Length: 349
Image (cartoon, rainbow, N blue to C red; front, side, top):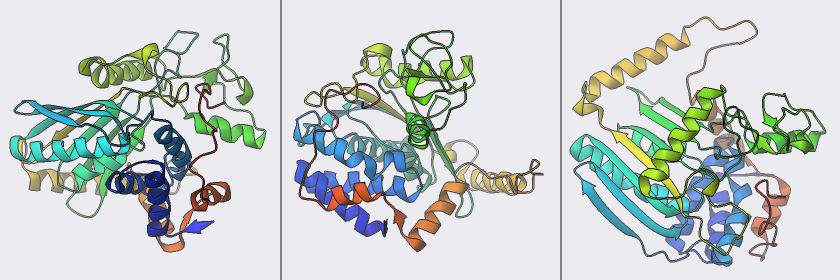
């Protein structure tokens, strides 16, 4: 099934509003989810709507949050979102960070007590469109083993980065700190295929190639990825007075309770450093040189971060965004949810 982006947006917003979100929050959430699908990041797009709707309907996502915002210094602030929609919380936090960075050069905005925030590059690219540089990160529930460990401790704890250039190009990446996302393991299951031994471990902490025996994911680049996982947990958890590591709430254990997750935006105004014009010109020059780099054998060209997702977006905007039939059927149904996620394990099983 292929849908144009406005149609997909409207279907998502209608469902989330019916579940209990205000129309304003439902529209913001729908925009971030439709963005993810348009970029080919389907794991953070419409596939998430039913889960969000179930959590909203059961009270685990505050439909009408009592939001507070406190600027704690010239370039720092805390946004408490009362366990409201994380997609909305992250956008509101980035709006505040952009405003602060334009005024003071740098902004660090921590967001406390929020739910799952989706695709982080949506928020960092908000800043890049305003001629700012952004880093964003958030903690997640334990699903990955620490380097040298045999059981899960940290989450996939993603990091995103975006920066503008002197033209329409934007450098943008959004990555989990695990070798692969859980969605890739599910895909291997659906195909009856083995997975590489570098992706995950079984219940004994041993590498496994059987997607059905996966108990936890492995960090990228061994100890380096482990360090990044910890860094994200410190900056988006401990720094904000929130639970860390194994204490971070499960996505599925109890959908009637708020998740109390943390998120951190860091926004930098190039005008306060090298100067905006020089920064953007140099960024464009770097990308031009990257595009001239000799590709490896079997590779057609070298892409800069975010280039391929923009190509996918152009294709989807021209030909429609591909949505799985089951998801489409749910979106057009009168049902809010089907009790599929509550009290499931970390892999929604």
